[in-house]
Image 1 (cartoon, rainbow, N blue to C red):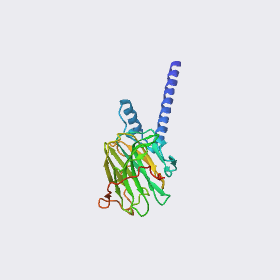
Image 2 (cartoon, rainbow, N blue to C red):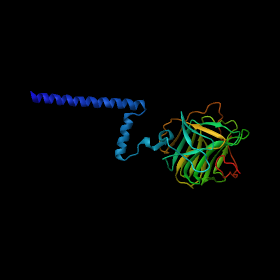
Image 3 (cartoon, rainbow, N blue to C red):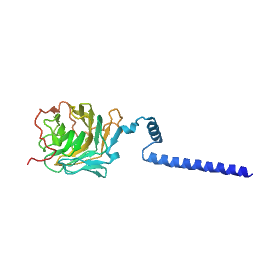
Length: 280
């Protein structure tokens, strides 16, 4: 009888442990589901990690995930701050996404909101394959700017050495006068080897080639006439599937640049100054 009681108590104990494990699993699964993560994803990440494979989720990073901005050295006067729904950049401010560096990647800047606080010298840039040194940034930048309301906006790829923008630019194009670059355009930069292609709202707008810098980090900078808000900045490997789905259509009220509308500007000197820095 005593042996039977012990076996019965042991069986009850095992059953209680099993119920506790099931309860913990259920609560964990519910928490993951609420946060948008499936148990299958977690299982695949564990298996991939044990087998030495790269998980699909690890081929991309975003500013929202890292939440780590580092001030860019040089003539910029501030960094990038977290906002209620994304990030904000003050006038003549810049930051690099801390902890990230790569060679080939696709950058995706979403939820852009630009405020022109001055009547001139408006614009911002996306740095890539860039490093911040004590004298400033060395790397590349995709820039979009509008000197004043009487001139059309211009997009360009530029190269920087120790905080100095090299002239002429690697390439630039003039956008239509009616193109609204200040309200939620989606900007993507495809960086592969020596070829860089910029997209505005899913449409290719400018391609250039240069092989000076092989790898580096990414960042955002503003000119001294502009403050900027954006929702997120994502960097993913070219082979990695985008988690943001298809590029949203351009609003009907916003004219989209076409091959006929966009013209390549002739090479001309570009000020070897950081965005917004004034001549003495």
